[in-house]
Length: 448
Image (cartoon, rainbow, N blue to C red; front, side):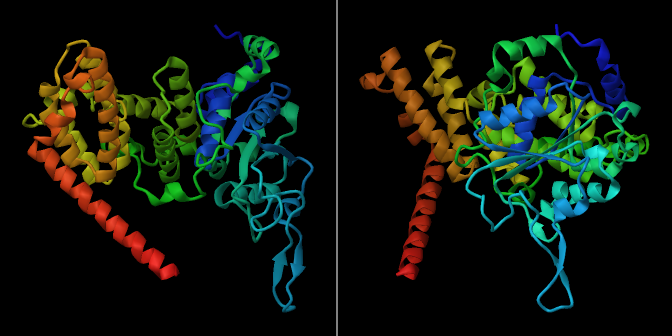
C-alpha cells in the first residue's frame, strides 16, 4: 500500500477539482515516456520538492537524453520566441533563434533533448502564450523546434503558497494541449528510489533514443483514429465534447484530446507493449485520463480491453471460417475502416496460441487450417506475410517437440497450401511482390 504524506492534501484537493486521481512517481514516469512517443506534452502537477524535476532528470538519463531545465517563472516571452529584429527588407520583422533551445536546422540536432518548461503557472500571461505555441505547434516564434526535442512541463497546484497564476490553471486551452499527471508524494516511493534510483524508470518499453522508436512529428495525424476510440464515441456521442467538464474547470474531452487517446492506443500496439498487468493498466488509465479526465478514461479503457478480447485467438483458430463468426465480423469491420494495424496487433500471438494448443492436444493442425486460410485471405498481404513467418516458425518448433512429419513440422503449412483461400492469399502476395520489384527497378533506373 502506497503511503501518502499528510502534507499532500493540497495536491489531492486539486486532483479532485480537475477530475484526476493522483499517482506515484513511477507511474508518472511511464506516462511521461508514453507521451514522448506520441509527441504529447506531459504536465506534471505536484507540490514543490516532491520529485517532479528529479524524475524527469532520471528519465532523461535512462533514455540517454540531454536534459534542459527551462524555468519560466523568471522568463519573458522573448526568451522562448527569440527577440524580434528587423528583416533585411527593412519593413518586416523576424525572430532571432532563442538562446540554448535546439532549433530545427541549427546546431545540436544530433542528440535527443528533454526540455522541461518548468513552473509554467508561475509565469505571466505572455509567457503562457509562448508556451502554448510550443505545446501545440512546436514553434518558438517563427522557428520550429528540432525533431530531437521532447517537451515536458511541470507546475505546482494553484495555491497561495506558490504565487501561481490561478487563471492559467483553469484555462481550457491549457487543459486540452497537455496530458496532466498529478503526482502524490509517497514515502514508499521515496524509499524504493533511495535504494535503487533506476527503479523509477525501469519498465518494459524501448528507450526513446533507440532507432525507429520515436515517430516523426505529425505522423500520427495522418492515420484514421484508433477503432476503439471511434467505436466508443459512436456509442457515447454526448461526451465527444464535454462542455460540462470544461465549464466546471476540469480536464475535458474534445476532438483533440480524443485524438491524443487514439495516438496512445496505436503506440502501445506499435511498440508491442503488454498492458495486461495491474500496474500497466493503471499507467495507461493515467495517460488517457490526462487527456479526457478520469471518468471518461476509465470507460474508454474498459471498452478497449473488452473489444481487444473480441478477437480471441482460439475463436479465430477454431471458428473463424464458421458462418457469422464474431471475430470474422470484427476483422471485416476493422479492415473496412482502414485499421489494418489493429488487426496486425491482434494477430501477434496467434501462432503462439496455436502452438500451445497443439502441444496441449487441445486441437490439431487439421482443425485450424481452414480458419487460418480465411484469415490469410482477408488481411493485407504484408500482415499475412508476418503471420505466415510466425506460423512457419511455430510449426517447425512444435513439430520437432511432438514428433510431427519428418520431425520438422506438424503439417500445418502443408495443409494451408491445400486450402483455396490460402492459395488466393499466396497469389495476391506474389503479385504484390512482383509489382514492388518492378517499382524498385524503375526507381533505380531513374537514378542512373
